[in-house]
Amino acid sequence: MNYTVNEDELLERLVPRVESRISSKIVQRIIDALKEELYPPEDMIREEFVKEIEEAKKEKGKTLKNIHELESYLKANC
Image (tube, rainbow, N blue to C red):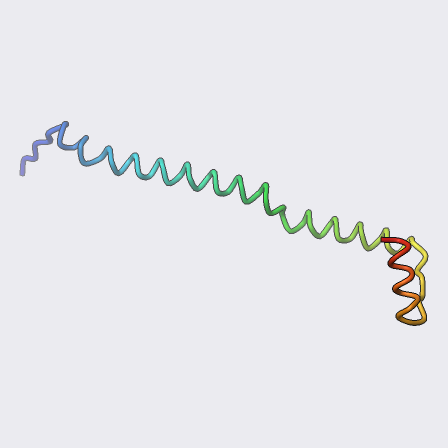
C-alpha cells in the first residue's frame, strides 16, 4: 500500500484540533488559577481555624446569666 499525504489537507484537518486542545488547556489553567485565588487550600483553612481556636482559648470567657445580659453585652460591644 502506498499512501500519499497532501500536506495542505492534513494541516486543514489537524489545525482545528490542535487549536481546540490548546484553547481548552489555557481555559483550564485559568480556571485552576482562579480557584486557587478564590478557594484557598484546605490546609490553609485548617491552619487559620486552629489559630483562631488557640486565640479563643487564651481569652477569658464571659458567662451571661440571661437574655438581658446578653442583649446588654451585645449592645455595648458590637
